[in-house]
Amino acid sequence: MTTPTQSSAADARNHHPPSADEVRDSSIGELMRQVTSDLSTLMRQEVELAKAEIRQEGKKAGKAAGLFGGAGFGAYMVALFLSLALWGGLSNVMDAGWAGLIVAVIWAAIAAVLYTMGRRNAERIRGLKQTNDSVQRIPDALKPHPEGVTR
Image 1: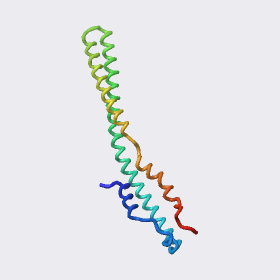
Image 2: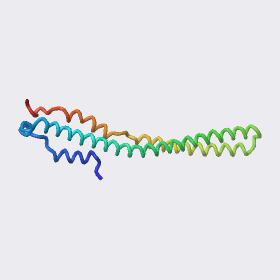
Image 3: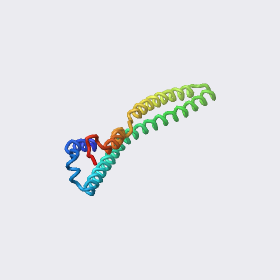
Image 4: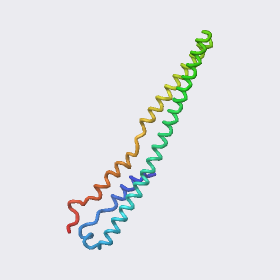
């Protein structure tokens, strides 16, 4: 499957800029129609590229958010079991308190692993890089070329 950038690159290779003679022989209306058509195509391609990138990056962001949610739940469990362990340990200084502490340590390890995985996934989110690069090139495409048409 080709991305909008790949298809637009192929179109650009097959579509040559008009020569000075072709431009001189064209009416203003024809030139405006060509410019309008080219800008319309360019905008449609940019919108499609942005949609594709948003879908792709949204999936990564969703996975990272889920892992961060798991880390948050783990942190909640750590607080709960540490509180229970402290309460149990202070109230009767028996094995029940140490058991609560062991469970809390296990949840701390789980939360640390989930957090690390979430952070690693979040670092892979790169934003709309292709769309941003492509949009930044648009002003250059609209500038006249030095060998362009003279008035």
